[in-house]
Image 1 (cartoon, rainbow, N blue to C red):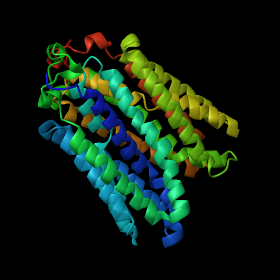
Image 2 (tube, rainbow, N blue to C red):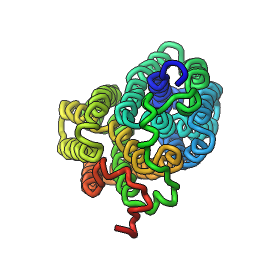
Image 3 (tube, one colour):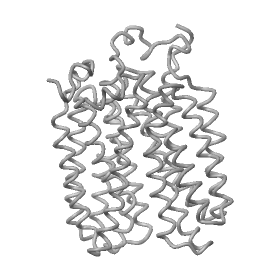
Image 4 (tube, rainbow, N blue to C red):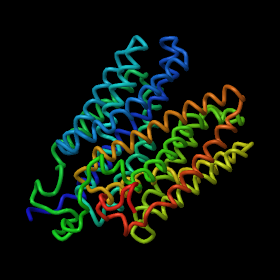
Length: 413
């Protein structure tokens, strides 16, 4: 074995990468007001960029997954971070709405698909097998910390130096900090430096046989994990995009939505850490069931909320059951189908997630325009989460996941 095991360093860089990727992609909402004020674009017109971004991101997940399977996660992540950085630099030059649609709606989404959760999950899964759940949870905390740090920074930059300077600064963060770290400080897998996953030669022989997407599509675990994850996407983006407006509906200030989402991100970071510690003890299936159930209860609470203080309770409880779903589902897919085919398979899972996410955002807005209230869409979200918990109950336990997928297809036993 050559040199000190660098797996922990890879986890740290994945954490930083996810900070930048999620921080930039979710910062777009803070540019809506200054763009509207500067160019006279309506909120509806600007918001369309978010829909384009979500759809593009979903479509490119399996494409990037296929590239990862062929070239490895490192060049794909580095390329994606570069595209995100360049797209933000370009947004500092926009004068027409189509430019915002293209730079944020398409380019940023393509970059995000390449350097977001799916790609970094594959990278971590190649470096760890026995410690995979813990390391996925630790790296995934970058998604929460990125929101806690970069979203306030974006607001500060816009307020002090204008939206163009904010775009430039965020783009440079990706290009000067994140891209070099990925390029020079990571490797695709331990074998490239003469090391082994978990820094243990024996773990190589305990890894599951890698599967093809065609096999995964005929497998119960794939569909149970994907459909459960879809309920996560449906309610995640419904909450992220519409909670600020709901807060105003209940008498809160326009700034309350950002505070609530920040509180949810903080709670999610704590839960993410705890989930990583508890996975080996309780198992991924049991934790997923718990998280979907807690999120279901939080939506029941939200559907009956009439005052602002109830939104704070919702933000905390919902946040605890939010982002930790991602590393758990990633762990299920990796354990069941193997690391080498994980890019395309996991990318397909994310495509289903994003399709559900886009529909959740649209349906919530549509029902709000018809009924003048978010209550119907919140009850719908609760029903969707109940389905997610129900279908997850049929997932096999962790110790049964490593069976070769060809032995247990939808048409088999």
